[in-house]
Length: 254
Image 1 (tube, rainbow, N blue to C red):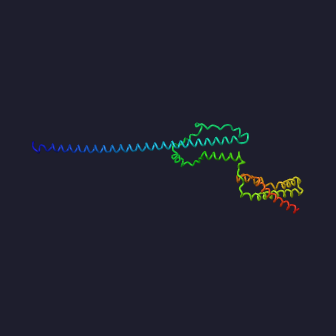
Image 2: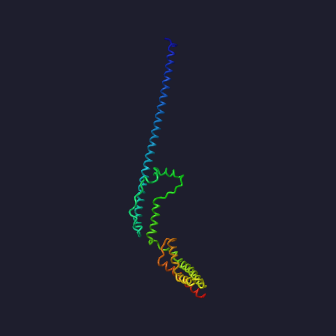
Image 3: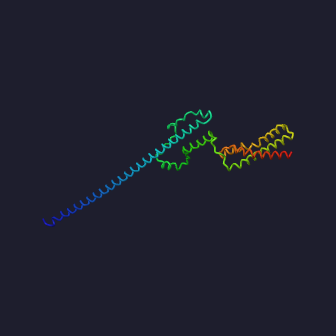
């Protein structure tokens, strides 16, 4: 066999070797891509698993915090209910035991969010004002303190003490002017003049102490304090001075 006869066999061999090399290269490329895809999928699955575990841990912590808040609110509500039952008055004492919480089926379908951050993001577009149970209980405690224990109010501030004689004098002066007007009007010979004059003289009698109720109401409503015996004395002092001056002026005019 000559060299010319062996040449096609060598060419076919080279073609087969080239095809084998190409197949090997494609196999290596496919294996590399498959390994890379598997690694990426494994990393993604591990990330999703870690994220899920983090969300579960956050939900557990939030649920524990919510349960602790519920227990605190229940204890505070029970304390306020017991304090209200011990108050004076028949209607308050007939309250009975603390009522049981409303069943879940009777409540509106407002499920607790599993993620507080997601709930806050969902409620960002809804302008809903929600008050904390602690705020509501604190307001109830303040009302109980005001209505049940009014004697526990603080004393009148010292800066308000110099104003009490002025308040007493002002109210006494107004009452004295009213009394003077009634006496003068009753002396004009109108029908029932004696009754009107009697009301005028009665107003003269109560004029010195007319500022005490006004000062007490002002201290109770505005300053949230009580008018003690010293405040009553200062108010009466101003009222007596004003009433005395009004009486002298009225007597001098007659």
